[in-house]
Image: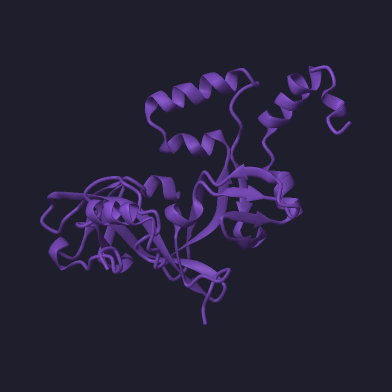
Length: 131
Length: 105
């Protein structure tokens, strides 16, 4: 039977967009904000990559939403560029989308890293959370 | 092309009248990959929540609400549309398009 991760049919918005992207340990690394489609030589279109990041999300937001995101992003050094995760990197699809470790590293949000380093890292005791 | 360019795009009937919007992009599995099969189109932008194709039955009130909101929602095969910039032109009359199975069952 023709299936893709156990599914015969996938509605891209309902089933994939806004799902959490998780690494092989189950840790969240981002969210599916958009999906790239490519036209095949036979004329059919196929989804080829997940896109994540505020730049990818902006297309779906109303104007006020885009302004809010951009102003918030300025506090963390500017909006993230779009990161692209090829469909070949998907290992499982259920309530979240599991991807390979290499893809997870590529999908990690630079803004989140900056917040960890510049804000959370300066909180006294931040480096000893497990103690 | 990106899915977000299609979602919400206006859909025009064969006679040129504005008829609906793209609600979702349906794909089918083919040799381990996905291929775009068609579009879910409706008169408003409300999402489907998956009730139309996964045999979901509850919560019953949400299912009823989704069924009522999407009573006019249709499925159009990719062969029955033409993409013209950011609009979708139907090649087949809206009245001939099938409703989504499972919404009111």
